[in-house]
Length: 304
Image (cartoon, rainbow, N blue to C red; front, side, top):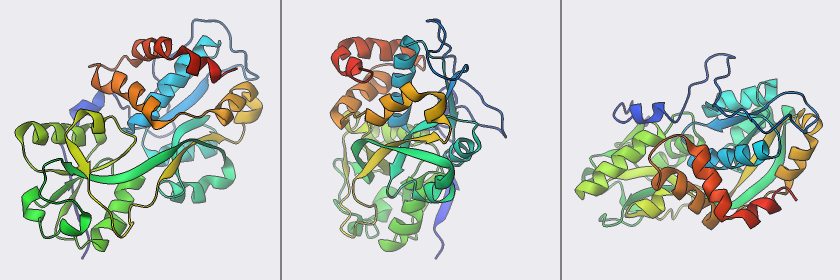
């Protein structure tokens, strides 16, 4: 049976401030132009940094590097977009890099399609994991119990952006593998999913959502991962930096910094928590700059 899907409209408005749609070949940029002088790189232009809509670890990492690079004299422009247009843009030279490629599983289809025209600089975090999460007091602990308990969860799995690898794997692997075909896999957005999670946990109701680690939601909500005895969500993955083929020539110094960059999950959690949990807004640069001041030794080491 084909997996049933529907679009979730509630909460979509929350994404508006944080995610800008990419239309055609036009680039919608964040207000991130540097006032600190001309670029020290080899290219006399801004670095075009693509950011996946709704993927908070990538948003956090992108703002971190925007702050770092602008302090070093580079101009950096952030463009929010869905996953597929980002890889097409990297291959076509419209973007310079994205910091949130999950390998070897989640974004493997895109790397197979565009891999000859982009460059993988390697993983900066190797603790990433796709998950299916429920409220902490839910009556089940494993995905192989979910089908029998579907009524307890309103027969719905609340998902994120339809173009994401997480939704593909959930729909193509997890749903049929655990006999969840009678449940509706809801296509929405990460902000909409988090709004549903907030509402359910505040009300003491059961909910099942697609999620991933590292994510600040694990610090903010009383939730737990469902066990995956068949391993259909895959093992831990690396979060990679992927660049356009010309990036190393255009920005050799930055390419070297990013090639050597590493950041563990606890440090990433603290940055995400500062941006998305403790702060209620979308002007992230001042928040990131405060976080940098508190973690100056780590940040200085990224460009030394």
